[in-house]
Image (tube, rainbow, N blue to C red; front, side, top):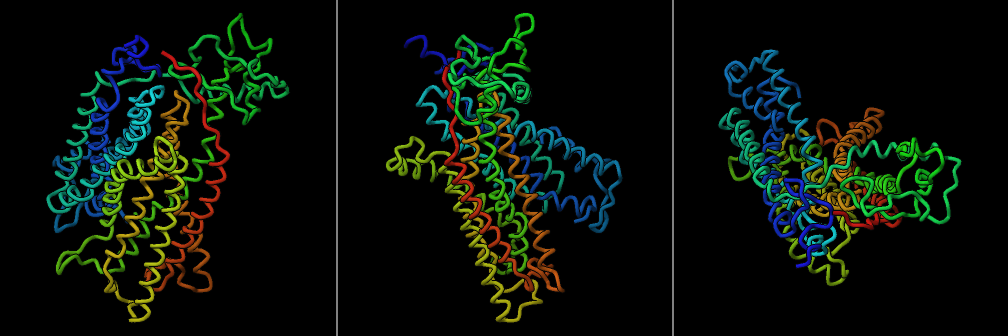
Length: 527
């Protein structure tokens, strides 16, 4: 084997900061430790999150991950920190409530550190310059999302049962143990990991390009783009990053790479006056991602209905499973998780090889095509939810069930809409993970992963905003509105169809920006 084939060509190093040896590090040798960590960490997170509202309501009398897990366990089990309860009524002290919320804030802090980094770190185990490894990387994102949902499935079924029927000390203690296992799993693979070199603050480099561009607002960009400033050697000026080739779009920022006499101080480059082509292209890459990122917000608003209006819709239906057991309406989100667990291997093992025969693409579909398919499926999910609600309301009207709390229509009619959203996740959310990783500059991948995750939060805000607007407009002149307290008098299907219409418009916008999108061009491997 030639010496150049022994080491990775993407600049990654091993745990001793030496060039990573290809056959001893990375790929699927290292990924099981990362996937095990993610599965246990998500089990711990959802083990707290899924049933948190009941703990707040019944243990701390509130109205309608990691370090914090230990504190939550202590607050639920240590005598001095656990609220005293009599006749199912609890009386928490200020200290007990404070310890509980301290635990939650620590979980939020820890999750914020893990979430945007772990998927990028897992993908870093595959060398982009090796076609065989690059092909496996796409599969990694599928199984990464699969491991998340395995953890969520155990949490939302087994742990919820333990918290409700055994006790909160066990219910919070098991997630704490799971988190310890997650940490142990992660560090067990240390010798096998490939590590990207830290490239410094990406935000600093972005602002340097912006400042340099506006300082040279009157400077003319040369027609010959080879005259733009770039380091002369093979290694990029950004540590741990490959050089990026110049692209024609967003040419205003090329001004930052035009060298003038005032750009050097005592012979040294002033980074706030002169940027390399690679640094300029980093900024361009981020800007090009933003329209694609924005189209994910409405999809996230659709996804958020599982925890809100789907639950309210389910509350009006027959909750019985058998003669005596009643399933909580919120528990139907299990079918979304089951759907993801079903569709991930189907997509990876069946759909991709089948699509590859027609498209010729190594991954079956491009990442942009994959996300588009998910957006189409999300429209179908909203149409299904709206159709079910229309049928339900017709039954209410036909049999005068208006004041009936649970009408004789099984809640399991909701399963298709949950299952369809799970399918949409496999296409859009996993496609987003892979797309933002692949198209992010090498030294900004965690930043771009964090950016993609913000669509979930903004989707929830958008959903809340739409509900408020719809309620305000539809309740005028004494009307009950689309979403009244008693949904039997409402028109919830209108809201689902509104989301379907917005999703159609969003799909149109997505297709336009996807057609306009220019992929990044990495030009020189480093090592």
